[in-house]
Image (cartoon, rainbow, N blue to C red; front, side):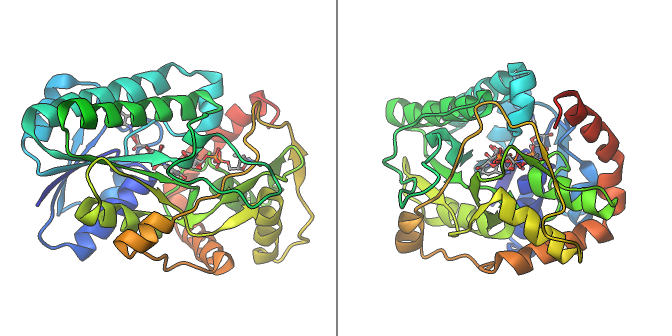
Length: 331
Ligand code: NAD
Ligand code: DAU
C-alpha cells in the first residue's frame, strides 16, 4: 500500500510514520511536509531509509496532484496547529488548513484516492468546566479560535466533497496528544523543558481549564483503525478518557521532577481560552474495536519526561525562540 502522509515531519505525523514503518512492512510511505518551524526532518531519522520525504506545501496544486496520483491512500496531518500562533497571525492557518485541505481534496477527487482527514475536538468549541457532557459526533460545530475555525472549515470541506463528489474520505477528531517529538511551544513539552532548565512551569490564568489527554501512539492506532475499517463519509471521535486540569498536569510534572507541586507561575490567560474538552469515543471503540494502550497518564507523562531528557539535541534549538515569543504576550 502506497501511503502519502502530509505533515509527516510534525509531532503526530512523525510518530504515525514511525509506527507505520514498524508495524506495516507492506506500507510504502511518502511524506509531504513544508518543514515549517514545526516540522523537523530529524524526527524521521529512525526511519529515513524506509521513507521518502518531499519538502513542499499542500497548497502547491501541481506537486500535490503528482504525489496523490502515485498513492493509494492519503493520511492528512499537515496543519498550522498552535492556538496561540493563530491569535498572533491567522493568515497561515487559513492558507494551510483551509486552502491546503481544499487542494488535497481536489487531487483525491481527480485520482479516486482514499483520503483520511486528521482533525481536532476543538471544532466543537468547549464544554462547561463541571459537568458530564462530552463531545459526540452529533455535537454542533462551534469553534473559538482562528486555529479551530480553520480546522472546522477543513472538516466541512471534506464532508461536502464526500457528499457532492463521492470522495472516499473519513474524518477523525482527536483530543490533546502528548508524547515524544511534540514542539516545545505546546503545554506539556514547554513545562517539561522549563523544568529541565530549572525554570518554573507557566500556567495560563487560574489553570482550571481541562484537556482530555491521549498518548500520540493511541491516537495513531485509532487513525489506522479508521483508515482500515472506518465507514466512508463517517466522523470518528478519538479520546482516551484522560480529562485533567492544567493545574493537575503541572503539579504532576513538578512531582516527577522531585519538586514542590505548587511551585509554578500564573501568567496571562489565552484570549477566548476554551474551558474544557472531553471526548465520547463510543463509536470508535464499539464499531472499530479500538482501545487505548496508555491508560495511566502519570506513567505516560514520566516516559515523556524521560524522552525530553534523553533528546535535548532535538528540542534545544527551538527553546529560546519559543520563550522569547511567549515573553511578548506576557506568557
Ligand atoms: P505540528 O504543528 O507538530 O505538525 C504540523 C506539520 O505540518 C509540520 O511538520 C509542518 O511542517 C507541516 N506543515 C505545516 N504547513 C504545511 C503546508 N502548508 N504544507 C505541508 N506541510 C505543512 O502538528 P501536530 O500537533 O502534529 O498536529 C497534526 C495534525 O493533528 C493537525 O492537523 C492537527 O490539527 C491535528 N490534531 C492535533 C492534536 C494535538 O494535540 N497536537 C490533537 C488533535 C488533532
Ligand atoms: O484538543 C486538541 C488540540 O490540542 C489540537 O487541535 C491542537 O493542535 C493542540 O495544540 C492542542 O490545543 P491546546 O490549545 O489545548 O494545546 P496547548 O498545548 O497549546 O495548551 C494546552 C492547555 O494548556 C491549554 O488550556 C492552554 C494551557 N497552557 C498552554 C501553554 C503553552 C498553559 O497553561 N501554559 C502554557 O505555557
